[in-house]
Length: 177
Image 1 (cartoon, rainbow, N blue to C red):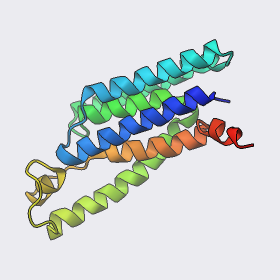
Image 2: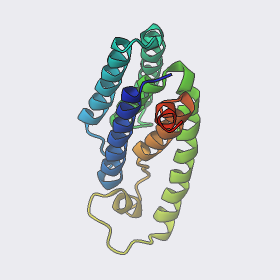
Image 3: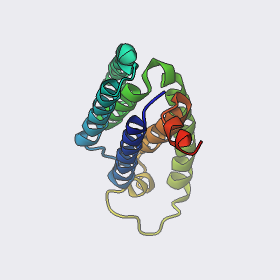
Image 4: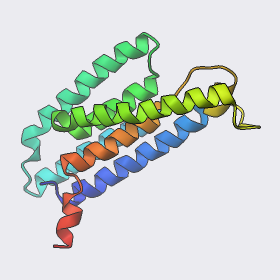
């Protein structure tokens, strides 16, 4: 079971994901430092957990392997113009947190949220409901005819649910029992 420290750091990682989502929504850009901070929070959390007597390091390779697989696949998707580089790095950073155990959950819930974003994008592009969108924003680009989705929102949504399923928040509930 994760320690309270690992649980707190996972909340910070999700907070960085929310920041990435806002940045992606505003201008379809996810700064590199966000994914780096999420990865550092993971390494810090697992190091602290290990020093506190946790056995989490024994599964560290599963987390690194999950992040590596995701990065290789999404790098190919970026090269093909399917996703942005920021999306690739953000998803890889969250895959580091979920490991192989939570990877399918992360991908599934990310895809569900991405589908909803895609539907919203179609509506916005076709109906143009916002009179004066902020220049350079996702909505402005859509209403100009671009096909783009701020997938950082979907990635962070998937990570939130995967973190619950992996058990990062059990330590919070154990405080009250």
